[in-house]
Length: 256
Length: 94
Image (cartoon, rainbow over all chains, first blue to last red; front, side, top):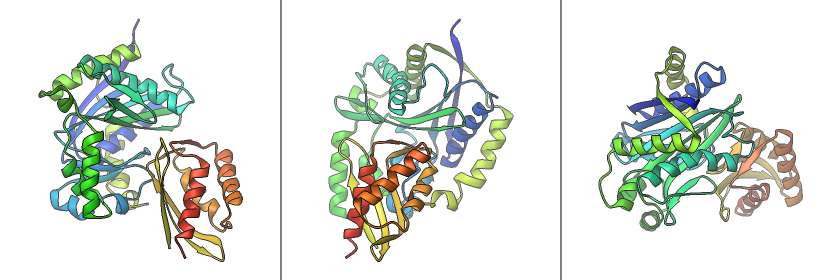
């Protein structure tokens, strides 16, 4: 029998909910309350997330975000600054027990295996995507997906983004840059080094089409069946608690 | 205060901010887009560096010992990169 995982599409939420829910799912998994889970989600309002080790003040132009109603949040995973555009990006998370056949003690290897679901999904869309260490997925040398992983109490959480559309000039109005001159250079660099599904395919790709391909990619690559599921009460109440106590708090977001 | 930024070739970015006193680290903050597991060990790493003389061998030993003791895994950055960035930040200090 094919191994079954829970599948969630939680739709549009703000940054604090999105990050709190990933942690709540991880905790629920560590208590064996839920099966391994793949979640798709998006961001409303658009938001900037920073890695665990980054400085909010150094990375994010807080005033520019406030002006545009864009959220900013610190992740529990390392890695870099990400602009999550409401229309431009699909985000996923994988929550899986550390002793699962897909996981290994080797972080780099586990990134590659868990990213293989995305790679297969993108291949199904006609995009010859490949994994690139440390934590990226690229097509023709350009980045199309960034990913980040953490482990706690026997559970791996990997979340990441798949770019549907890119808008480097907007992204760089939200990030701190050393000078205006450098802002232009950075936009140019990102334009050259980052692509998106729509840019690569040269056509519109709906979120529905993208999600369907990725879902199939995960099932094929992981040899699992994804079963539509629901959040349990434990996850919902822990999420509410984490939003207040952690993800919307200044002490968490500005701790570095 | 001294600051430095180091882009690891084929890896991640490390940033160090520090103050020094009598050639020892007084305060230090390490940030960047690297991966370090478990994440909480970054506080202990910074703590371990406080009071240490700004000498390459001492710093490298301190970083290595802490990573070993806490069973820390690094990705996109190596102990020597942290140390290089610390030394760059202190030479910025004047």
